[in-house]
Length: 156
Ligand code: HEC
Image (tube, rainbow, N blue to C red; front, side, top):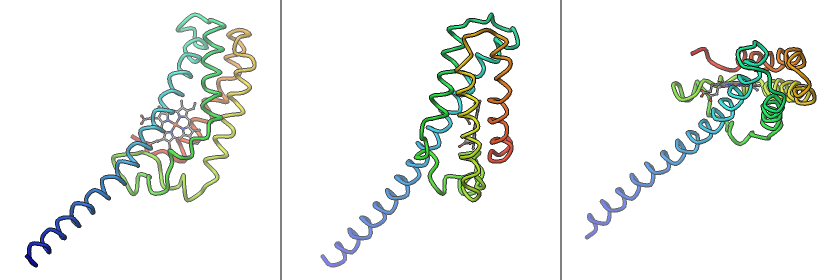
């Protein structure tokens, strides 16, 4: 009886310890998924504007305006919850490309995000005014993306 209880207790311990680990990992998995999703939406919307700027697709004022607004909305959302401490590529190699420096040099990454937000606001003010306005403003957006990736994203 005594032994049986001991075995039962250690089984409970192993089970809950295992569960604790998987819950923690699962939490990071979803956070990483969420921030990658935001990035994918950035790329999709910026891609629309880029294709118009290059002439690969015909300029369309409404579509340009929508893409610019989408980037603005995302750049001004507070998605800090998707960047928990410890969810960096040093701790979780292969799961994320976010460098630990994004946390250790904070608020540098947030400053770049502010630049992106300002560039996105500038773009959304004029994106419907013609392809030249898109061309004039796209560099500042792409530059902010690139700046952050150069500093805080692992190469593939
Ligand atoms: C403040 C920093 C920052 C800004 C600004 C930023 N990114 Fe990122 N981006 C990252 C980091 C860090 C990752 C790696 C995320 C991860 O793997 O967890 C990333 C990943 C990505 C990815 C890969 C997503 C995946 O599925 O692995 C794409 C695409 C991307 N960014 C596009 C963009 C575009 C387009 C912009 C600008 C409109 C942008 N990013 C702005 C930091 C930034």
